[in-house]
Image (cartoon, rainbow, N blue to C red; front, side):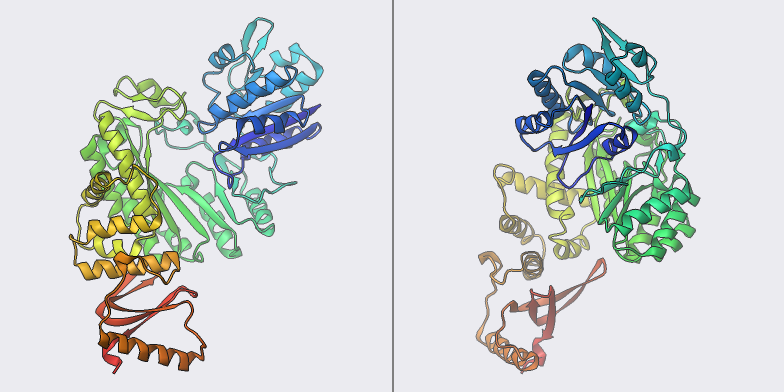
Length: 562
């Protein structure tokens, strides 16, 4: 019997961990993995699967792929009604009876952790055994005209019993790895709040498996652990082990930054730059809202610890906020945004509340007046304290912030600008308002247009020559083009032109160059030099030699050129 384990990933660079776990459990059968993306053509995906002539197709279901997954499953069943369709994953575990009732092309739904369900299910399908199905906990299925539900799968207490998913195949994509399941916190918006126990793979096994991934030259490993440092001794041992190995592989962890202690900081100091990436879910700094979502967090400790890490400069720190949490209004969001931006994180993701089926907030939605999309990804539309128009505005605000801050394209310009503002929210609100008025959201905006928009926004708010020169730095470093757009071009007088010629002659003579290809020499009012995470500014009259081929520049004082 042939089984296809399928997943429609959000992006091509992603891989699916769940179907690899399941494959290891049913290796006695003819099993094939099939991965595509939600951006691919539905019919092409369906025919790709059917042509493999499977007996069973099992799909991994999440909020980002459920819509397309159901369409593919429907098409497959219409082509060949003998193919058994199995769905599993968090998106189908909490309304399985309704789904089976609604969609007659679904044969089985696995509810909860599927690793110990998939083998007896496939065995029962192979043997055509109703008795076998009835004895499996964690299933919803049809038996004649009746729907049978056997409850949720039993929680797997021994994570070491789950086989390593990458023994036979390592995808050339982002690799997802799991050292623990469950979360010690009970945040009401999160599915992990349902899982009451935190379970760990043994430390020696984790080290062995990570070493295997490193030896196979995996580029990026993302730990899916909800709070990686929930067990301090466990996380410290893994961090120390990876630091000692010092591989080229990078590792991404989701951590609770307020749990970090001085011992953790001392360990992390030893990591080479780029080895680790941290994701920190702040979500809000409003104490009342934190209580509403049953979340415990000490933001001052978060701020202090992230600042320490950023000062070391070796770990990329990504922080999160969520729009639409219970009783958070626009002023509360403004404060949370400013609180987090005061840290100057490498990246701040502004997310929007998703009312996930089965999560505690799903049952509290009426209490807080939460209205949300009735289809995946179930995004918030309004609450008692945040109107739909405010959420619509914050969606635009988020897009502007993503374009201009998280992209790091304008980091020299913003580094300077931020030293003169004390309310980050108002700054980005004014930028958003300006861009709305100037058609930013009405058409596709290219990189040069983005520079033109921010140039016009900033030029009358700050010293004009400084802003122009900062944007020149950012433009040249990001485009590697020596041809500046018209609005950034410099007016060069005869005296400066003479000095540029002198400078070119010295460069050719010193470096024995036959031409100056890849070099651009401009008069500038400052030298903006990036050192680790910070930008150092030296304000004076310079000739700056931009070496775009080698991603560097050299500043020579005009006074030195006589």
